[in-house]
Image (cartoon, rainbow, N blue to C red; front, side, top):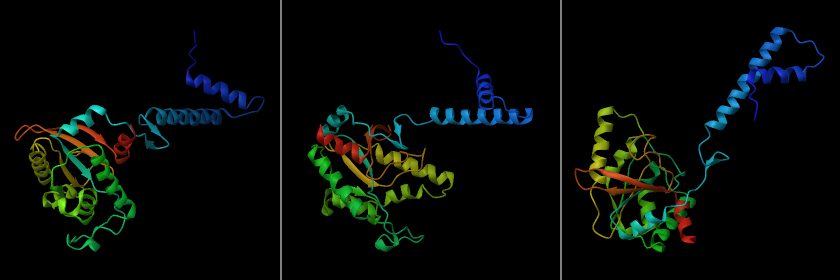
Length: 245
């Protein structure tokens, strides 16, 4: 049987051991007890609140459920994909969609991500409906073009509204955008294909939530008026991991 020792008693015993034979004023001794108690509490709080699967501050990659892969091969889903890493330039307050210099763009690393994404879907035999839809930003169109071919991409201005969700929108406008999003995502693609949308991440807790670069949210449409269901998520690394199974 393990004896339970209250933390204050344990701290007092520790301090008495450290300062054995030395005079420490009572006020200072009590202050040190409070300091040690707060320090121990903070350490325990950090341990208890660390995300499950976290290591070194980064979430471990999770394998994609094989049943999800099999379902995607049958078609009937929407793959909502965030564009590749975009670190070149910045978005101007007055973005011109025909002028990439007014926007953040893909560096070479982001382009390689997009190519790998498209190659992985083809290698895994996941059927894709064309044209692939992309937000009219240069980074989203380029991601889609590198993954699927420039002639198989169609710009859709609706997805600019998703980009705008990260700004300061009035609640009514934000809700209207989310309602329109539902209408888009509840419509099923043609049989035996999957629709791909290359667009933007969402703010935390809104819509489909935060999405990493080339991360994918897998959506099962329920038909017009019936909404949709998010059935899976995977990062680019998790998708590539399927190639080696």
